Amino acid sequence: MSYIPTNHKEVIKRGWTGLDVIFVSGDAYIDHPAFGVPLLARLLESHGFRVGIIAQPDWRSKEAFMTLGRPKLFFAVSAGAMDSMVAHYTPARKLRHDDAYSPGNRRGARPNRATMVYTSRLKEAFKDLPVIIGGIEASLRRFAHYDFWENKVRRSILFDAKADLLIYGMAERAILEVAERMRNGELIGNIRDVRGTAYNAATIGIGPALTVPSFEEISTSKENFAEAFRLEYLEQNPFSGRAIVQKHGNRMLICNPPSLPLEEPEIDAVYALPFEKSPHPSYSEPITAWEQIKTSITSHRGCFGGCAFCAITMHQGKIIQSRSKSSILAEVTSLTRKAWFKGSISDIGGPTANMYGLNCANTVAMKACQRESCLFPAICPNLNTSDKSAVSLLREVRSLSGVKHSAVSSGVRYDLLEKQNSYFSELTAHHVSGRLKIAPEHLVDHVTDIMRKPGRKLFESFCARFREQSYRIGKRQYIVPYLISGHPGCTLDDMFELAVALKKMGIKVEQVQDFTPTPGTIASCMFYSGLDPMSGKSVYSAVTDREKGLQKSLLLWHLPAERSKAMVALKELGRERDAGLLWGNENRDKNVSKKCFES
Ligand code: SF4
Image (cartoon, rainbow, N blue to C red; front, top):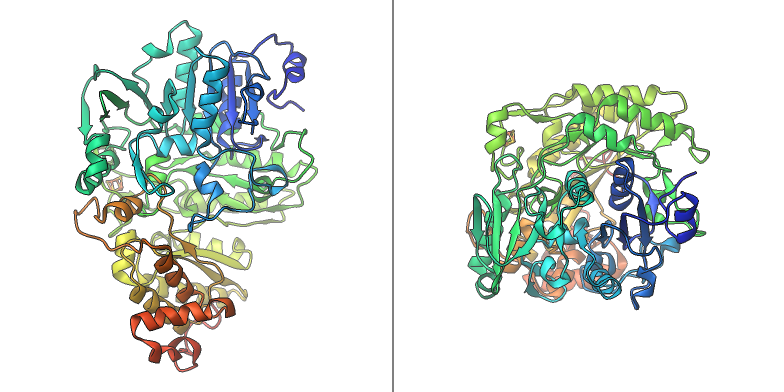
């Protein structure tokens, strides 16, 4: 058993006298490729760097940051797999009571704005040592951005954290290049040309760059805010995106173009690193995040769906990076040898499961493409939608010895499934596990248009297709629809229309995602600026906690605890007389979906 060292004893055990790079993470250390810090630590280790991890240090003093000594090259800081404010607060800004990334599910193991706090403690402890920040929190806050929790525009996190360099997106290429150049004697202050990095400079001094409205300009004008976001978003194509410059006072944020996607052998090599696939043995309590992913397999990265509320375009990117089938099968085989493996794979997927193996068939167009989505408003004719690779992968995984069942629990895009008959058949026949998660997110067309999602018609036809197929193969299985309340573009009226439509289909949802304007999404830009950054059109948003709460209650009308709130919503709409559409029986379409949804 060989984990990355987390204390002095483990460093000595490796025969080392010191470390080159130390990661500081807001999450517990789980040696699994689903988590960014262990993945990057293993990658650097495989290139001969001596690496350590300090997981969830006590941030109240600098001592906890000194336990592994002074690294020769740099500290690498990540708040963890989630932005620390999202991890700590509900969409209503209430403190969460648990933390899936901490032992015992206990909250309080990392501070708010962990990237900034950790960097500051490290600078106290080791004044002149470089600190590089990365992970979701740093990545999505790399430009000046709207912060929902303070309800204001904040500077780039690079300026607030006072870090030496920021790595955004999937960091393998960037961190390896920076570490190798520093190992060869280059100073971090001279490393200014690495893709996927951003830095603070007094002058521009680089090649072709795009200047976007400054921090000061976007703080005082919502039009400027939306325009800066639009420009930043459109430059995310790694093949044609330019460096972006954003002034902050008399300094500049310089953000280099995104890293190039990993080629198949490169991504395979990352997943072949010697992960233990379990939490560091020092933990005595269960860690929920590990329980959730320990039998799941990542088949690819990236998503070309371009949903407005999702930050994947700004982090992983739109280009799908798929592992080879043999790499995935090797991982599943090694999983079947784990003592705790009982025969079930909980997921084979990525951000969107049915995008495995897909790409743009027109390389020239792809390299210049600035479309937000390859699927919306209609599937791009250049998109290769073949399900051959994905089908073959599913078939071979389930035929492996030791695998009793394999599920696909990542989301699937049902507009894309329209073109993937074989994948749809495989999925429904073998990989649903009783409940298929589908994310229409809303069913009112002008809202789904703003979300960049397929609308109601396609959802209904998908449900019918799923129902017929399940019936034909003799399986009792259901669709679990995921929905968002309070999304920009959605009024209380729209929410009532959605609730009535769901009632008609026989759907009662147990959970609703209340929209949270997290950094890096088109929808968050709409929420703050009131504008769709791509069209410039005005967009309504429910901004008060009260209205957001009323919207949510309309979807949960059938729960006793929500009934009075839902009635308030109806009163506000002047539609109390329509309460029967929800609580009465007259609206149920007896021909629709009885066999498709649990209710
Ligand atoms: S050209 Fe079409 S398929 Fe290719 S990346 Fe652009 S939107 Fe996607």
